[in-house]
Image 1 (cartoon, helix red, strand yellow):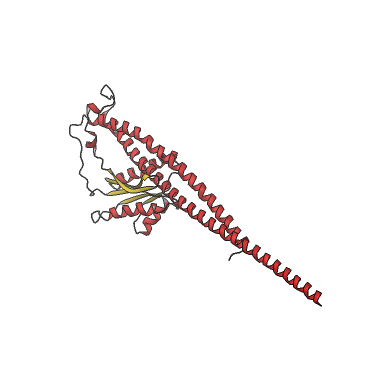
Image 2 (tube, rainbow, N blue to C red):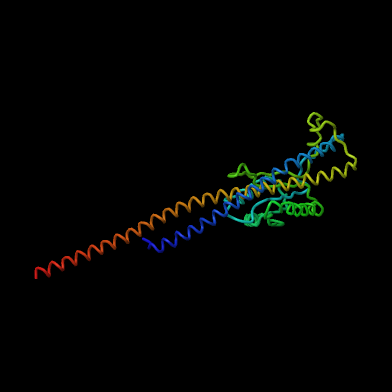
Length: 299
């Protein structure tokens, strides 16, 4: 059995780890709240952009429906994590993407942009070439900057490599404790989805109109559509990551509590054994002294 001193050191060490885990739990919970707010703020913004697209597309006589084809090349943006302690977060999203890649026609070699150092490392070890790896935004306020970086790479691929298909892969939160990997076919954009203009569904009393050039307005709205799609994927992924980390920290905290309680029991038992042995030694000494006194009296 360990000595009380050694057990006390272990307890202090476990309590130190417990404090770290508690801090990480608090940070994860705070970050989840930030990203949830970012996702919620997109709802009204997206609704405004969607209404704008419907207004512009109502004058389209022949809405553009593009039959999906991978002949023009494909690119993928996958969102993982830079840090660990988040369960199988990276394994799930990269595995989901690679599983989809296996269904692609032979000869299609997607370009891959990965956000998250750990996810990038997993893909490389799985034999999937990664064209670029970016670090993730540290806070919700930095997502917009990361999205601008992604858009620069997408524009470059479309211009230099003729990429016409773009898929987004990320983990989407179900709730704060779970998520599921998902994909979104961002390009080619199906403009006909915005052509169903229903007067009854319009929120205002009068129908909207616009004065600027139609193509310029459409281009501006589509840029916002791309931005929102990437922003939402990044925010959802970050929220899911911190949710997974929060779950992992809760499990770690429970294990530490149990281990500290177990060590506390061992410490108390060790102290009791020492006290018991000391008492037995005192009793034995007392009995020995009493025996010696009796012998002297008889002598």
